[in-house]
Amino acid sequence: MDIYVCNLCGHILSGSNKYNKHIIKSHILKGRYNHRKFKKLQNKVLFINVKDENNIPLNLEERYIRSKIKRKILKFE
Image (cartoon, rainbow, N blue to C red; front, side, top):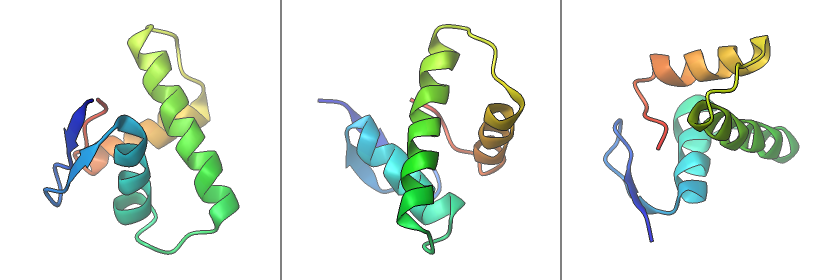
């Protein structure tokens, strides 16, 4: 089991799915979110992780999401 630590608030989370959900809910969308949009954004973040690991180029929307997360000083793990 993988353990992830949020760099902004120090939360300790088990599993990358819980880590991505925490980042999106707490730091990117700031608590308010539409569940349908949240699920889409969560899937996009997971897909960006896979693309980064395999060195596949990102499209414009994916680069925007990645830059928004990096501006918050978050790590993809």
